Length: 448
Image 1 (cartoon, helix red, strand yellow):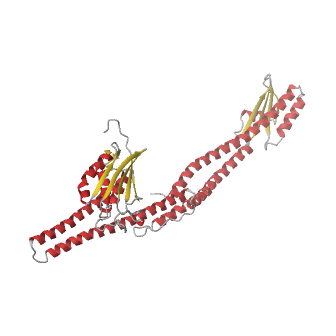
Image 2 (image 1 turned 30 degrees about the vertical axis):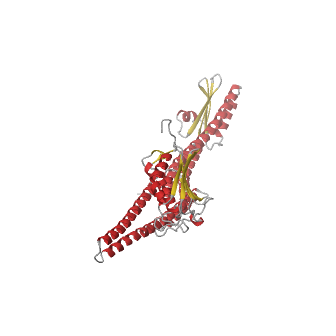
Image 3 (image 1 turned 60 degrees about the vertical axis):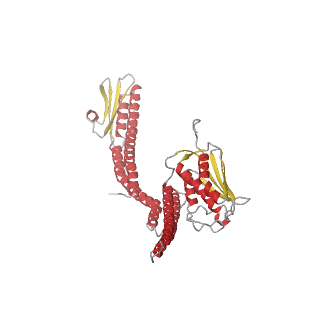
């Protein structure tokens, strides 16, 4: 059977307190009883010494007998005393007359004290009943047998209430959390005291719920945007095929319809590939297949690969990157990151006129900064903070109705998985510059 925290805490506390209470009670009884008996013995010892001193002073037998009878008759200890005085082993005084018999077979409740003189010639033996002290010890034991369980019961009831009060915020939190569902993420747990342990936990929990709500909202928006982007090429593809099959056409018309269908299919394939890439990057905390990559080589390869397309747009690509700019990461992902940035610059950074794309890289301390700058119209101020949002195309001069708005999003996620970041800004002389910052890798002298 599963027990609540309240029950477990109470059991743990009682498991500690009960043995300690029993031990403390036993220790108290023993200490109290032994103290009473010790005081009793000390009093008897003093009386025995008094009698022995009188004998040592050579008192008369009558004085000795009177003193012994007087001490034996005192009832200050709650019972009569039995006194026997011997000299050289011979009884010279006793009180009462049965004292010698009592001392030879004392009652279990009686305490017996013997005192010998310095030369051991005189011995004084005194016996007295310690029933009062023993009864006091028994009464204390009985009181503790009743008091300790009562105290433990009161303690358990108090702890039950205090623990319940301390755990009440957790019970309130559980009730509020039970109301949270995928369609109701606005519920938050109230905080009674933000400074205690429960309050700090609830604060962290509410922050987690905020992040979860944002993630679900972003996922819903991503799903809606992806569905919208997929619907457009599918609609175009379907409409083109329906038109082509509506009546008999010439071979040239069929070829044109198939070309349009192929273009829509390629767009669907690119979009599906981008969505799969984003899904993979979202799930990755680090790059896959980590290796050392020289970003200088990546930039030169991409510049060569994009040269023909750039020439058609009357754009020149200039690379300024010294060799040895090593980073640890996935070569394919890094290649795609900078290819997306160059593709974005070619599509948006020319504005239909001759221009230039500058690729530059340098190392500063433990970071490598790579910049892709163009001479186009720049980015509208309202778009600067959102150009890396998924499916966001912008509203300014660089808006692109043909693209899906995922290129820079993918670049940003690749930079994130490599421990870097992307920043975009407008250039003073016109155009836009996108800067990627990545942590530099430590390479051996033989790496090249």
